[in-house]
Image 1 (cartoon, rainbow, N blue to C red):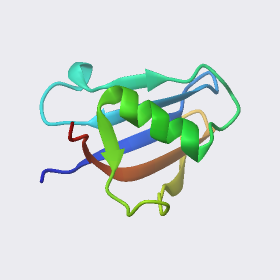
Image 2: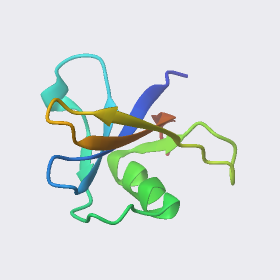
Image 3: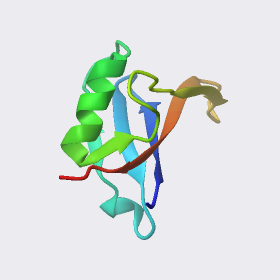
Length: 90
């Protein structure tokens, strides 16, 4: 089964969003906005992935998000997290 990479990122204004990187145009990537500056829970991220039609590839109960820091040109530290996902089977 094809897998993709979901990225969870803190945006320019400090709010969180989630997107699934797919082949093709970035504008077509599934995206979910959280609208909060507080880091959403693992459960909230899993629910958002479900809304987008995806689930993590990790075994049940072992959801893994890899966290990274990046520094923007203006010196602001941005937090990023990623996990491998697959389309949900219905």
